[in-house]
Length: 594
Image 1: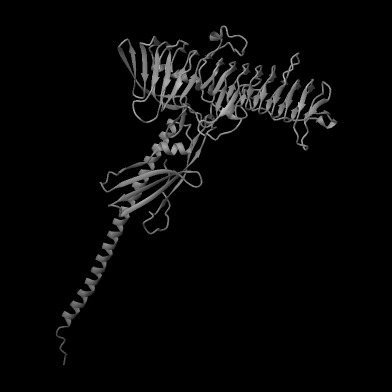
Image 2 (image 1 turned 90 degrees about the horizontal axis):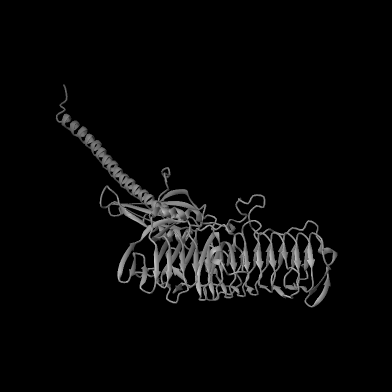
C-alpha cells in the first residue's frame, strides 16, 4: 500500500525558492559592490584628471615666465610663475590647485591636487623639471670692460663697493679687455683697486698703483724714460709674452713665458720662500739684479724654466677672432645688441626736445605727460621684447634732448617698476643749469639708444638699486646700439671727443648708471664720482673723479636677457596619495605629454 506524501511538493518549492532568493540576493549584493567600486573608480579617475589639468596649467605659466625672461634664475622663475587653480567642466565640485617649488635636489617641482565631491576623491600629481641656467652672462662682471681696448689716463681712483651690503670690504674693481689682441694702456696717476687683465698687452707709462694683478696674453711693458714713476703692483705679474720692468714695485711674483728685461729700480717683494720671485721662459735681456725687501738679489739659474707656461686671459681664439671665447662671460656682446634695431618697427617716432624750464615730461608706468607752455601731450606706454627679455612700460622717441628742460621718471602707484625709453636717434643732456633729469625712488629706467649719447650733466638718482620681484635692477641703465667706425681710444685730446666717441660723459656731478655699448667707443671725462659699470667697444677713462664699481651688479642683468642657452627639461611625474589619506601603492603614471 502506497504511503501518503502530503505537503512534500510545497516544502520542495520553498526550499528551491529560498535557494534562488539567496543566489539573487548575493548577486544583487555583488552588483551593488561592483557599482560602488565603479563609482569610486570614476571619482578617482576624475580627481586624477583634475590633478593632471593642474599640472598642465601650471606648466603653461612656467613656460610663459621662462619665455618672458630667460635671465631669471631658478628662484626668480618660481616667483614669476605663481600658482594655478580652477574648476573642471564636469561640475562645481571638481577643482584643482597647483603650485611650483624647488625640491631638495634643486629641481623644479610642480605639485597638483585634484579633488571631486568636496574632497571625497583626491589625487596628488607631482611633475619634476630640471632647470639648466644658460651661460649666466652678466654684462657688468667687472668695473670697466673695453672689448677692443682700455685706456686709463686720468688721476682718479677706480674702486669698488656693494650697494646691497654695507659691510662689504674688497678690491673688486677689475679692468679687462675681451677681444683678441686688445691692449690696456695705463697712463694715469690714480689707483686701481682691482686687477688689470688684457687679451693683448699692458703698457704702463706713468705712476700707477694696482691693488691686484697685471695679467696679459702678450707683453707687459714699463717703457724706459727719464721719470722715476715708482709704480706699485700689490699682486702678481703674468705675461704670455715679454715683460719689461722699470722703476716699479711688485709685492707678488713675476712670471713670463718669453723674454725678461729688468731696468733700474725694480723691486719684487714677495716673501714666500717656497715660491720663486721671478721665472721666465725666454732670454734675460738685462742685468739679473733686482731688490727684494731692501735686499739686492741676483736671479739664480733656476729662474729660467724651459717651456714655462702662463695661463691665458680668457679671450677669443687667436686663430679665429669670431670664435666663442674660452669663458662665455668674457664675450663682448652677451645681450646681442644688434637686435635693438628691431624696435624701429614701432615707429615712426616723435622728437622730444626739452628746452627752457617750460618744457617738461613726466614718465611713469601708465603714461608720459609732456607739457609745453601749458599745452599737454600724452604718450601711452607699450610692451616690447628687448634684448631677450620682456620690457614693459616702453616709450618711443626719435631724438631726445634735454637742454634746459626737465625729464622726471616717477611712479603713479606705490609698487616699484621698470620703465624703458627707446631712442632711435641721439640722446643728449647739456650742461645748462636748467637741464633736469631725475629718476625717482622705485623706478628702474633703461635707455635704449641707437644714436650717439652725450651727457654733460648727470641724472639725479634717488635710489641706486630698485627692489623688484623676481629680481633687482639698477636705477639707470644705458644701452647703446650705435656702431662707430672711429675706434677711438685716447685720453690725450678733449677737442672733438663728441664726434669721435659714441658715448661721451663729461659731468662734474656724481653719476649712477650702467653702460652697455659693445659696438661703440666710450669716453668718460667725469670730474666727480661715476658709480656702476662700463662695458664698451673700447673705454677711455680720462677723468679725475673716482670710478666706483658696484659689485651688486655681478648678480644683475638690468634689462637684458643674458642667460643664453637656459632651458627647462621634463624629468618625470608620479601620483602620490594626499597626506590626509591612507597611502596606497603607486600606480604607473600616464605617458607624459608636456
